[in-house]
Image (cartoon, rainbow, N blue to C red; front, side, top):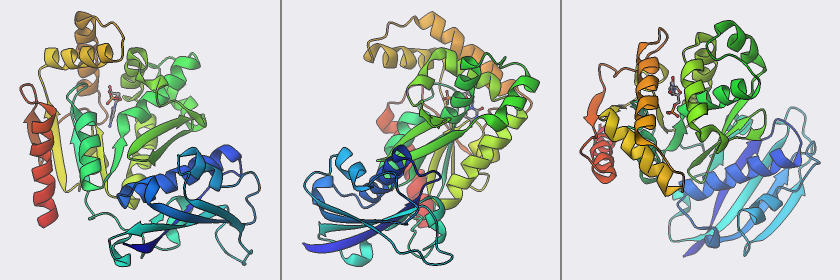
Length: 345
Ligand code: DC
């Protein structure tokens, strides 16, 4: 074991304590995740911040994440004409058996432009997983993201956030005019930290609030509106431009990432999908009515498959996997072998 150094940098849009801590957390989370280390492996972290950050010490985020043993230090950088603004940098020292050349440095936000030579795009692969509600996309995508060191992007969550906005603001999700007029004022952001995606609506963390059946129904409706799709698809492509992703949704293989190296369309019998949703809800202690859920799934399938704009359909070059009689491990293996084949190509 020897001391190794991992570097990270991230920019914040606004100098607020909440954003400084959230962005620092996502940078540290990414360092931990893509280097496959435990918080206990960290010996020390030196943080620096440009002198236009005055609201908070980034080191507080490390403590909040449970990095309690490491020694932490924050310092302000000198201002150099033309340098990146509102930037937080970290130098993480760890104990590792790996060589220094095996360390993965992490540059997020505007900091990505700083050291493109150090930003590793994992193995430079993107994986598109499409399919109807309840086909097992998100469960399997999260497992594969972990295994192959990919960033998991749940695009449905973005449509749900817009749906939630409409629910909360009395906007009719069937009205293209109402929704498209509201769209420029709706801010949806995603953050990836520790292999988890968190979603923010106008700065509020709505990761759990979007998981209701009502938000899902709103999401399906607003997802048919071209102005909503073009805004969210642009965000999704931007994320994929900067990192290796496994992205799930309805139009990833056919529209968002048409050149994805692996494309999968997951399907399953509608009643089986309803049964899985019921099980998920019951595990959370929520009583569920299978007939009602089956009907909601049927309605959502109908909407998602029959809309004009990028409907749910398998890409011509997608591998179609019917998961009705498969367990999650079998699905993971089937897609995993496609990813491995693509990595060898
Ligand atoms: O995957 P999900 O159930 O969270 O998605 C919610 C809704 O969002 C879904 O019914 C249709 C829409 N959606 C979409 O149109 N395109 C995507 N890429 C992802 C989701």
